[in-house]
Length: 358
Image (cartoon, rainbow, N blue to C red; front, side, top):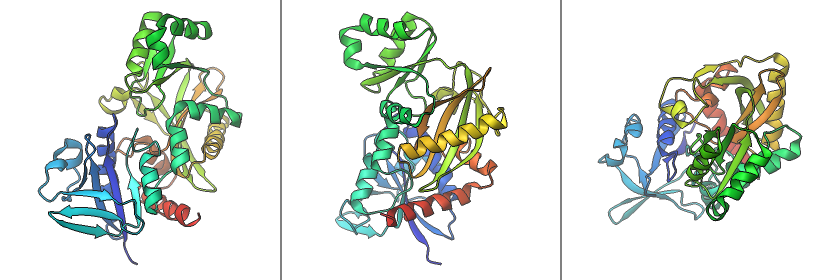
């Protein structure tokens, strides 16, 4: 069987740059070399594209990949048929790419930006297409669309950067008129809990909002839900399927960036410690939200399940979830009978299917 040429994009101009490097290391180490020729293309924090000249993907998390002597400046051409271009002095090397796996998290990688480039280039790619990527990345848009599904979600209030700077007391009053403390404060357009805070007082709320507007001009303030953090992985195009449910016990105030990636305080439970009835409700709700937002390929859908009544409450959706060795998405499907390498095969097949179904 002819090998497929797979371009793996990683890094990116995003606060989640380092997470992407770790995810890409795991992905490329598990792509079957008998099936795929891998073209690793890293995007630096400054926005430079580099075709990585090495084969030791452990160089990615350390950052040393940027200085490999075999590196070449690279680009994906928006002109159909040109594929991946790399540059050796005055010479241009052109590689045909069958599929792109954008292992990019956050802005400029998960928000429809790179998906638009690949759409123009006519290259199939893993994951959601432009509109779904953009809608899922913007938590306000996600809330508005998910609200039409009938799935319960946490109540929320929008605060903009301009409102906070021009009338901060009015913004605080508006939030306090709707919610009791504690509340969660989230930038509208980040993942991996970047910029997310839990506020227990007016002073803490102001500090949380000021921190959040560093990352986005729109900020969501959400009611506190007293429940377990439950996640489910979804896979598919026209007929998506949900994995078993997993639960995260953060071992901290909440599952923030530091708890996810820098400490070992959190504990994962697969399956989640909820009833079979609640688990099925979560899985069905995940597919409804996934389809309403127009997702294809993959997404991880996050919920709260109430401690007392097991009420299922939608939290958020992530269209390019982490693929590190500790990430929930591959772990959930492994527990559902799909090993990591087979999962990658399926994602690539779904990318090709979505492209040629258009």
